Image (cartoon, rainbow, N blue to C red; front, side):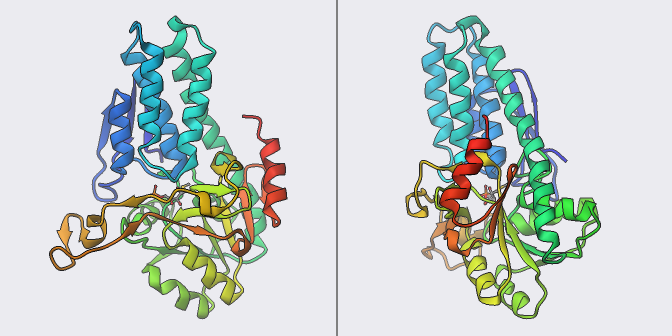
Length: 343
Ligand code: MRU
């Protein structure tokens, strides 16, 4: 399953706001169109928005070919893409990699070079996820086959396969997965709509639970391990991920259940020392007071929609990357793992 397709000069995205009941592909041919799709969550998930932004910038280069101000305009477009969503560092990381190619390329070769780099970013993500899946299955297998996960970290959130959901897929491929508990993930319902859709497609056994059921599920002994994704991991292991992740980590600690984060090294932000410095996106309150455009709260009710929270590294049992599983103290293990990444 893929939700991103590409050709030179355009990127096609499967509109994730309409899944699972409608599969609508949209074609985008400029950076601003892609930035809007990222902001509106037609494409979402940290690695997926990085890849989409890379293709958005490549499409912009194609659209502006021959423009005497091509370089300046591409830098400005990259800035607009970068600001589409603030928390996932993959977005900035992918754009930095694209701008590095821009700097090294002669004017008449820019469109081709940026397209080639976007394809390379997308292909690398697929290979990376397979490696995360394999390392993750090795480490999770020792705890058991009943997994709780949050949000959507699968093919839809990446280019293909997924991070935490890639680990779940790998456990299933090895025949050692028993069951997945899928947090519905209020308010966007990435779990109920998207993770459930991916698991159903694969024939992986699962139950959707409301987010507030997780504690009871753990207390009942239904969960062997929690595996989630990440949007940005600070140098000390503090991890920003979908709102509700922190709650799960606290619950897991209380119940003595291992809590793993699965993420590519493109999600590491070693320049950020702790989670306190990670920018947390706050989205429109309407996304809490309304469901699919229909009000569920009194008219004019005030609400807060923090899209992410930060889980302290000390609550995380291990961080599964494409280079292996980092263990505490993260300040050392993540620095070592980042050295292996020869981006
Ligand atoms: O707001 P979203 O849907 O973009 O949030 C997605 C998440 O929080 C995922 O867990 C994270 O991006 C990892 S995706 C492999």
